[in-house]
Length: 388
Ligand code: NG1
Image 1 (spheres, rainbow, N blue to C red):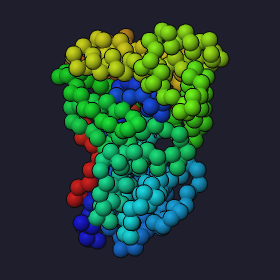
Image 2 (image 1 turned 30 degrees about the vertical axis):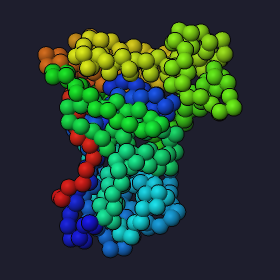
Image 3 (image 1 turned 45 degrees about the horizontal axis):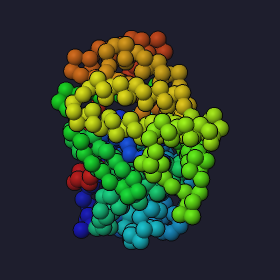
């Protein structure tokens, strides 16, 4: 039922932290994130006309308005409204009738451009708000796949991890997400496993600089796949087909012969990360914190050396966290800046945060950080709309 124009609604969409399985989603291999207890919120009323009008208390996010009619025009590159426009465009192109708009304010506590998926949280919150305003619903998996395609409107050739994690979060659970077709399997996080997120203080602006580097990786992965598999009459096989047929060592020997050194390293990251994701899921089900942590460290090294998306700052955070007793640590999200995630327990979570403050943040900032740069996160429920 469409909300009355007087009711105030709140669309809440969590960010996510990917635990392992990085740069695998757009290669059709699983990922293993959690939705987190930090979110993007749109407080809105339903508008009688098909127009979206949103503002933000943050000065650099200027107010905007646009018409809900096809084609939804893009704002200039980098403008925050493009994430809301992407959601509207995705719904309209899917045939959802949007006769009513929304009017409201966007707030949130997911750090921006940090690999915690604030952009997808805004896309998903916008979609849920528009669906609510128009009394429409879509199955969650369908909406997640639709919003993953829609977000490409902003220019990133992304996979579907973020939108799926945001819509399917379950308190206390990690989410194994499979692609083609999209499926989500919650896995209970063992009692006492704690996750610490630490920002490198370097923004990874996916609508800006990091975009080209990200899209280049996606292209290289396609080229590497074609180089190893060759094209058959059925088209290009998927990474998971190659991994199903060959043992990993055999596959890597074949790839080394077929590919240039750079493409080989990209390929090696993707297939070994695919295997690590599967092993990490088993480690979580077994409650084996050391094994899970070890796989996170291997993932980071592969992202640093083979995929070349880490930075000296992310490497430094990982080193400090491990030194202070974390079971594992790695960059999370696309890299090129953004955040790292560390796996701790109840006894190490405090010391790891303290060590990062003393050895990473204070030397760089000259003072304790103002907050929001290093924090523990909880696996949390997915996106929803509530009465405000
Ligand atoms: P972040 O860093 O949150 O933008 C990006 C992609 C993911 C995934 C990761 C790398 C989007 C919206 N996000 O995440 O799909 O590919 O990089 O694992 O495209």
